[in-house]
Amino acid sequence: MAKIAVIGGGLGGLSGAIRLAKMGHDVELFEKNDRLGGKMNEQRLGAYRFDAGPSLITMPFIIEELFDFAGVRRRDFIEFVAVEPICRYFFPDGSTFNAHADRRKMIDELRSFAPAQVHAFEKFMAYAKRIYDITTDVFVLHSIHELADLLTWRTAAKMVRIGQIDAFRTVHQAVSRFFQDKRLVQVFDRYPTYNGSDPFQAPATLNTIPYVEFGLGGFYIRGGLYRLVEALAQVAQGLGVTLQTSMPVEKILHREKKICGLQVNGTMRAFDALLCNADVVESFHTLIDDYTDVRDRLSAFEPSLSGMVFLWGVRRRFDRLAQHNIFFSENYEHEFRQIFADRTPPDDPTVYIAITSKADAEHAPADGENWFVLINMPYLTGEQNWAAAVEKTRGIVLSKLKRHGLEIRDVIEQEQVYTPKDFHRLYGSNKGSIYGISSNDRRMAFRRPANRCKRLAGLYFAGGSSHPGGGVPLVIQSGKIAAELIDKQMK
Image (tube, rainbow, N blue to C red):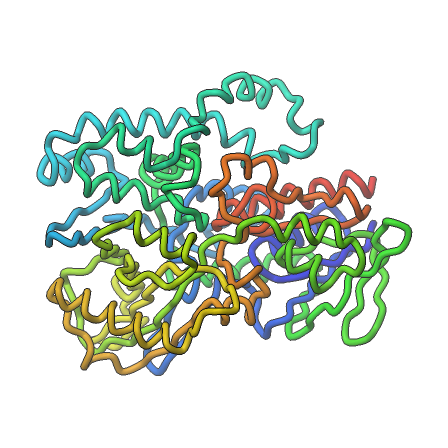
């Protein structure tokens, strides 16, 4: 039995800790904040309760498999609820569109919204499914950095088809070839933002994401997504994992190119291996001494999108809104150019609003709603004035909503705001990014930091900044990949 430390109690850390404990190892997890979950968190403001991070579950089979591996039944801990519609889209011209995972409902919606595009949607979904079928085994379920993992009959068969994953066009270029209706182009262009990337730069391989949502469905967790964190913590403790919150790790200790332990509260603690759920880039800057060449190489990677979040307790109900809503900008390309090229807050942002009280009435007063409002933002450069950006963006968002007939300025009775500076302070994310490293470079699937550090024996990574990337299912999967690699090393 090996003694293993897990740094960080986000989904990747919890996933890895559960697996390692089930494999028979002695596991101790250190979380710097007073609550587990990392960016999957919750907040309460008066009578309003909010999911303060991810708001939709996709690829639920990855979560199911984790509970199964732990020897417990997922349904004894959390309940998945299909979200219907998955999202309601509001366009600058005043039109609206409901996106459905139910194929019949989606086709009916398209026939009403853009009848000439029904066939285009079906062709696009067949194309997206093909990419999903090829990439899931190769890029998600296995480590592409471990040759032994790839040399299986299943992954080898997929690798033969790797040329079909559309890696040389951008998402926007590919989407535009399928759809003539500019509104639908904008709908399908938004999916790279699920891992913090720009549809006008990111490879069309990311068009697998719409298939994940429409083909496999989008889900909510009854009571809020933070129930997943609580469930995983309960499972981990049941397997003997020691969970310590408000316990920041100060240094990762190494000797002769091998991990030897941690420094926590000024005390040296010896461990056989470390699973680091902290951001890889930040870890080499703040936790790991020496290895400046690794630090410099990682610093060259472009961080993902960050965001500005408004948690609004709204003392009014709006039946026009669904559980998930998007209010698009007039010029999507200009919006992303401002974010990634100019690195300034967009002057006409796309606005995402999630309202869990649509599914769980107790999350808001009977005459109110809990609005989680997310606006894509650039990562930190040290030159932005975030106090000014909050005031400006708040006014822009309220004006945009008013143009759509949603006047809320006078009915907001609770508010909390998060900026990229807060994401960096709370979660130690590189330059305040939300999703780790962007996928704006078509080579990033192969260049993303590996789950096993090849420069320091005994050091492994899980989370959005390592393979396979950002987003709830991928982060949970990263914990699985890392745990399996650690277990193999310990045998």
